[in-house]
Image (tube, rainbow, N blue to C red):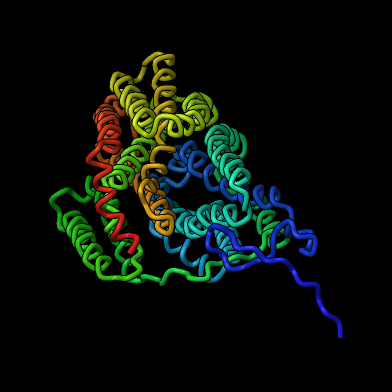
Length: 496
């Protein structure tokens, strides 16, 4: 009788089931490559993050070839972010239940298939549907990949470095996205922006199978199908009302019906989630001022970013007559500023708390909005560059304090759920920002934009100024004594 050597087991801090230690000599070689596992996870983040900026640059070309209205282009962005926002928390709990590697692989496969289908879309309607397929896959990739990284790197310092690399990939993808998207759209066509995801996705699926060990939670959260359905209905009807309102008419039964359903879904969601032992969204979190501030900041800042990318892609190409590559090149200063300031923001949070970076973020975003309220069809390009750098500075400052504030004061067992709500809020903000940008500028009601579009954007840029002011105020409120008292009040409830 042959006996197999016993493999040493360890328990990770992320509540994984007991699994072989990654450094154990008895473990197969393919499971000991921690940094290869990190690279595979970063591949998924890269293609998902880059996809947003790539598509924004290609929007005018997509609109011309598929004869799409502006509202159709809005749905091209928002169909993706809505589905992503709706399914992030479900995907996390599913991965804990059936296995993180399995969920990650399914997500990679769906995202790759969705990308291929997007490249073959015969109309904007089909493109929107295929973007939703992409988003279902995307929801299974990034949050689950972070769980895999947390489970893989047991040492706190190694985990911190791994998370730092993970965060840097976001900045790199944002920086190269407009250039890659612009170059491909100019030379090959907009469909090529989806082709590049296919070989990367296939390679990631294979590498995940070969090198990423399976892990799952010993006590996975129960599924909450009612809560999940209500979240989907709430987000879809709210964003749908904003996008279609100008076309349907704000007082039309269709538009009013969408907003009524959204309000009813929100009320029902709160009522249902209060009664569940393991809710999809624990409404008690919102009793914490820092947590509520983090959610509000995420929605506002990422809403401003969604509007910024959407409106500038149309302005630079349709009003200023630039090619996709040229427009990507001119928006590069914003991406570079975000890339540079993101790690600086993390250090500021560690040294001074969240107030300083939030105030700086509000000043940057609000200042960019103020500059953009002056643009017209012939604004000097240096003025635009100043606005883009200011926006990138502010947006780079805002991410670290959002995550830190969201989990501040939460029990360790609840920190993951709190961070998931903050991530959902980011994607929700992008959806609302794109929808609001089209509505405020009047672009949702027309098939294309003209020279007057630059002036029409001023109203949205004033809203961005207001968002900047709001973030500054939140910076002070979220770090106040009253905020700390609110955390102390709900802590015993969450511990229980």
